[in-house]
Length: 116
Image 1 (cartoon, rainbow, N blue to C red):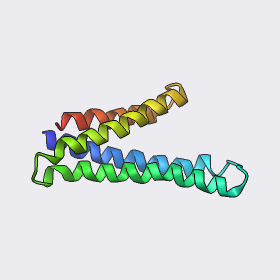
Image 2 (spheres, helix red, strand yellow):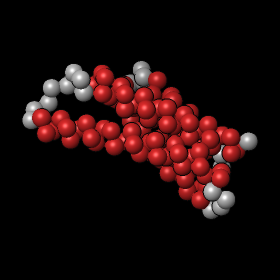
Image 3 (cartoon, rainbow, N blue to C red):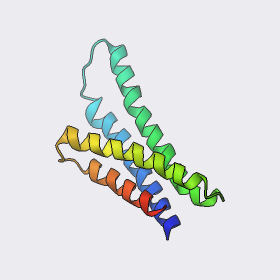
């Protein structure tokens, strides 16, 4: 059951990350006018870096049951909890709790913790 919780956390983590990246491109950066343009490109890359990181963590959560070592499991879960927990809090603060992203990220945290 705990392996299934980790894999569900991984799938949800990847879906949240993809939505994060797509929403940024369609809703944020398509409308943003930041000068100089180099700064806008930098902000886009920094934003999308978190998307890539979250996808990588999702794959780790999915893979950790198959790694064959119990030593890696708590470390992968700890990283996922810290990264997604921080993002959930940041999202909730920035949107004053009016965005589903923080709820979905907290779901990743809860599922990951169930996999301990």
